[in-house]
Length: 127
Image 1 (cartoon, one colour):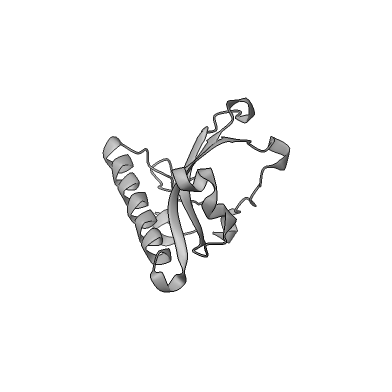
Image 2: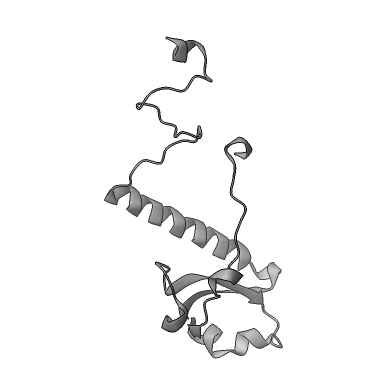
């Protein structure tokens, strides 16, 4: 009864929040994973379309970075895909690189763990 009257009183195991008051993430089934992949694809397409507008004078290209297997550690993926967005200027040297032309950059060196970017951890009160 106290839980219903006072929202600050945490519920039992049936609560949809974890011990920090954050919403628990439900396990994803195959359908939700597929839906998430479609959503990511749609967002990526919208970004690509927005940046590719002629008046922006930008070239948008799908790019795949393949890491040197000797520098990959832990459970990290050895492949990352994303968008490369560069100025259309013909003097832009990046546009003439083999990686930009083929859409694949090979033998990328992964930073050592000590040089990895470490974002601040969000505290429960800051969300």
